[in-house]
Length: 569
Image 1 (cartoon, one colour):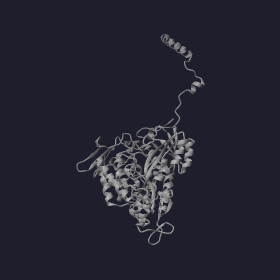
Image 2: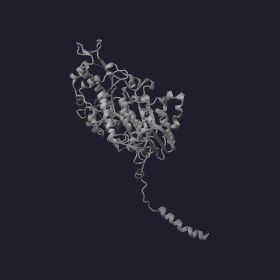
Image 3: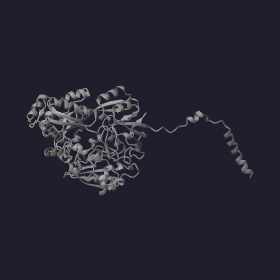
Image 4: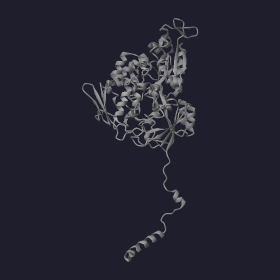
């Protein structure tokens, strides 16, 4: 007992001395406050110029008239195997790599058949935690090829011979023949019009009795589950949508925790919100905001505004049942182009900062230098335009307006949606055409009409719309015409049917060598400009605005390509 006490006593003394020693750390309130606190959640507000009731519309027939802002929200909540980056080059997202002949994932065989292989990144899961596998891709292909589903699709899928899933992370497609866009399958804005679908959530909807209601499923809106960097949060239809960072995103958790999406149908109200710093980042608004408004914002806003060349703005004739019938005559369409002072439009709308369009390929595109000489050019010549219309059998009345042989006025409808530049272009052209004697009835389509595929396919006269560059070639295939027996689904909005053009388009998609492919593009450019399908006006400009708090946001190419890396001060 005494031995134990002798051993413990020095230890007790040591403990007492330590306890009585002055503290090396103050316990004042100021020190307590200096203890590290968790970082405050990062939030931004995104503004779009349209309300929407679906976050994924590009694949749905009812979404054919999708307005600016909706596709951008789709890319935030969903992701594909790949996507276009800020240089408009394909970059892998959910896949480990984009197939190429260099990496061996794209094979071209001597008999012309091809094979592309995709490997899904390890750890890829849907936003509900269910693993994303090659079975989901097989299911998506089945849905895309189901003619009874109200989906947008294109002829590229007809070249697919067989798809298989050797294992849970490997997806292989065998192609019947060479196809230059085989690497874009399930890419954002790629060949297949929709991104991967979750088999575990939608498989039941493919049964016969459910197909009619497929595009009205709550999955496409409030119950959406995707693969993107953000997932749906609170959503009050018609007011606001909250997106929350997806902790399970395959490329890592986004830096911004919450994105508040607010709709501003009036661009002036949106601009006021931006000037008051209530909106950090407008999405899709560059395609719907006027150049003047964007210039004003650039002068007064604390953020940055960039002006970039965009798609071609054009008038699309309705050629399935042209009304009046002369709309179906290329000579009449040539006369209308000659009657239009397109240089005046460029100066009035964009202060000369863009150019008249003679091809659907813009000056910034790599193919432009090779094909610009193939286009048929039409100079502004209202006298020649009037003479060409007279040669078609029309005569001018005492009011200076053309009439047909029966004495009926030559009257064409000119449609557009509510977007500022489309409205301006429509009214300007209407004025020019009326000066040469063509009566024009401008039609302002509602948002509901723009989303109605039957209405868009059968509207008489011309439709004012933008369209893309080389990727728009498939839009002129006869097999893409919006016919009633196809549910008015298709990419060929004009209903132009020509077997010679079909053959050229088919050659384009199977011609692998770039020099030979550019020659085919030149022939397509010549054909379309000669037949004036569509009536090209000018190369549009788009404004990209980025708030002063935002960091790592691209101002060129695909603005959403690195949303996972967006940050704020």
